[in-house]
Figure (cartoon, helix red, strand yellow):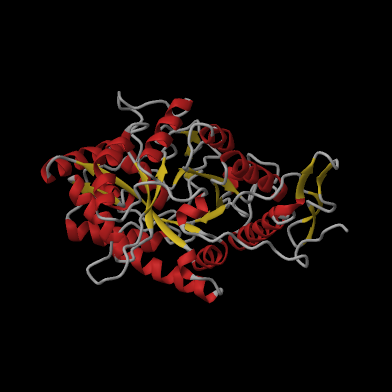
Length: 460
């Protein structure tokens, strides 16, 4: 099936995001389930696979967040270990990719390579690694490095981590695993030998896990700064984008695809996937009313104060959520008032100036401003309207697909799969059956060639 211009329709890539570390998930609703029970993960994964999604995505939470030195309950806590969850899901799914968010700052390359390639073997070629880096000393205090690295160093470490991990994956050739019972030969001589010496790591030895079914498991990344965009364009197979509004999403799409080409890559081998949520209704009015209720539940007056405290970096509890924005300036040199959240508004004075201008132009209160700033990427309407909007977004190169999350865990994804997925399939924009055997197959990504002997030090 083609578009009206005659070009083939892009196939929408879909990832399922299970919320759990932010205010978007309405954990306080009576119908909300556990954030820890295996049944929660199993239900979401099975639902995503029923909808022919490409992968299940787990974020990472390495520290309980603090407000003014005290843990607070605006965020959900209690995220189980990622690899344990995904390995369990490998046993109850057949086609769904399994994407693990794992920090490159606090983990060693050998350990990462072994865990991810093990998941790839156990799942038959469905593993993905979402590479993230540490952003503050508060989170880093939980680890033996005692904290953190500055921005440039953490990208240097992440880039070298990926380099080492890939060399470990390449330390086995596909034919190295012989398993000749009659001859008594298990593997070829030299299989798994590796050596690396660089600014961050000086390691060598024998890697104990044979080559992955995918060659290299899929690499995901999220890069927003110029340095982060270059890092993602050079190293990743897919980017988890924060841009949910079409104009900024398309600009980002064009920018990182061009950067990928600048690194000598085929831009089509880099997939751009913004996060997105949805609210459905039988009519447009019902959907808009429901979306308004969801936003009010997500961003209560107290939550609005806390969200904006991340920007102002000071206590805003005395300001009326239904009143104007605070008339004080952000505390630039003070210690972090909210600790443990990624700093997404680095230029605080510029952000405050922008929010004040928007609030004045639109007549927004403090709470309304927080809603507009912190609840992005939501598709609202009847199933037909949402399917149209998602499809147009992708066909017009705003992205290659979406990582879809719901405000309700674990059953929120059900209505999307029941009501929107069939419409996307009718349009020819979403598969009706899985065609590949690995995540790379389903994403349309090539299997990376194994690095030559010059890059992998092999024993003779």
